[in-house]
Image (cartoon, rainbow, N blue to C red):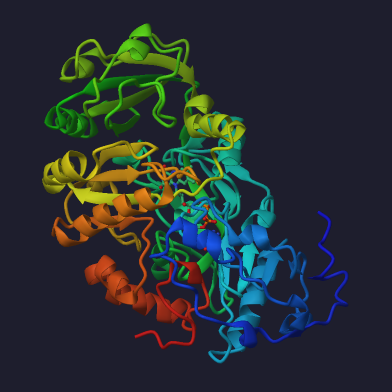
Length: 542
Ligand code: FAD
């Protein structure tokens, strides 16, 4: 790759710049209460004069390089709401590039406010992978170091770089007839990015989230130490990092568990107008033996047709009823199931299990797709949305984890009162079994054995003042979050986003103590992942 003009490089380590970073340090603007129009009024990206930068970095000997210019792309993410420009971007070619950069910043001590954010594929929603005037590490530069390596045997696994995209892992492992067990709905995300959160999709009821399907990690801590850890070797760091929101270390390698992969998927959707029947059937399926391989669901609010909901659309290949079914504007609930199979197998659908479900009889929609196309389903929608210019719009998404015992109360208020219209995007809703999840990780979930993931995935139409406009969607989000926080239902945010440490404290609850203990062990100066806004550098961690 060609280096940008102003960069530090091992081979070309001649650039000596004065880095007066402290002069430029400021608080991260609190943008949460701003409207979209205010974002447009203020410069989205705060400019600074990079030529004033001195260089503690000049002593670094890198296999990759540091770039000080043209870094605006790292001040953007999928959410497209927060825009914080870093002072430099590291394009690492080795783990030691990451380690030596962090070590250098660590040695600058708490007097320097320089922070470091790993950036995976930059698909966060609220600036989590950004570092205001800090250093962003472009993790995808690490791809291929080492090369992905599949290990066969009784417990097959693949060793990958932390900057690897899940889609590439899928293609590589399929060459061996294998695939990871647990996915996200969208695979153009990095291993480090999803393992820092959880990685939840329709397989999580059986296999747990992606963080439960990792054997080993290599991590660079906030002190710059390179540590290999697992459930047996340095377990404290291993479990801290999994679901740890990037707070304890940068994942540079991961060992992901695999299983045999089938070639095809039977993909089934059925509709309900009664929420109780819908959730009862979802709960039945996640606890049934020999159930489906994937169970999700979504809510369809106030739609007269079903063909215009991107994520959940019934594509035209579905039976003709799908396009004809008219909801008359009622709220509908769609249960979505998938069964993996090989073409030579017959009778793949569990008819007995299906016959136990209480969906509207005329609404059984089935299709068969390849395993790859099933897992790539959101990317296929992405291609269409990109063609229409509707992908790179603001996405103020919110994800909630709701205890099973409170899901009816939540649904009644949110789908009955708060949301009277669609949110210009899908609303996912499905239960998972917590008994399958490892509770030693940093991920925070509700206290019950079964809880629901409910995701409000709105897309803003930039110039709109209607229900798909920024202000309207933010207002709805705020009402849902306010209700969730005050109704005392034991709801937790997933991919959490808060403004104050008080809110973070409440989010972690009894796990907060462990979280800050781990922070002071592995990143005592709070250098890492400032975009999560949990800790501020140079403020003592107590
Ligand atoms: P980034 O946005 O680049 O980073 C996210 C956070 O992780 C940041 O704090 C960053 O500093 C940190 N980080 C990144 N790399 C590393 C690393 N190597 N080591 C340590 N910290 C690191 N999530 C689900 O669970 N299930 C889904 O089904 C799902 N579907 C999605 C669909 C779409 C279209 C999108 C845009 C997102 C979806 N997500 C889903 C959310 C997604 O998993 C998270 O936003 C994830 O963090 C994005 O990965 P990324 O590589 O882009 O990470």
